[in-house]
Length: 131
Image (cartoon, rainbow, N blue to C red; front, side, top):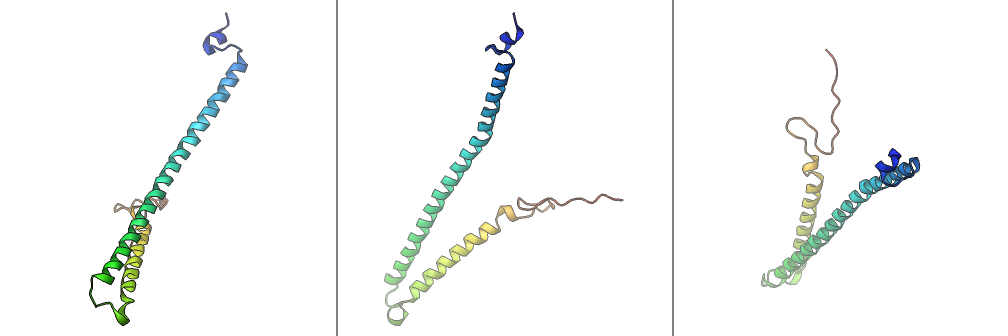
């Protein structure tokens, strides 16, 4: 009765152990690479879908605002001032884009915590050893 046969259940001794090790390494590599890549892909997909939906909503709101300025203001924006609703809506669009860019660059990841610890985008400072 060989002990290797009882423990592995497959027989073959060293060859079976090597095969088991190979399968273990391959399964571990798949687990540690494919799982996070699938999660990243899902994150990017939902982010892309959300950004397209927000963009479409913003465009529709801007067009609605333009239409309201053109029709509901009476004779205020007629004649030589007919370009003014377009300028107002373009200014609103630029303001929304600026607000989005500001929040992206100055969001939670860029802030330094009050106790001096670095934020997400900053490396920790090396402490000096000395007297």
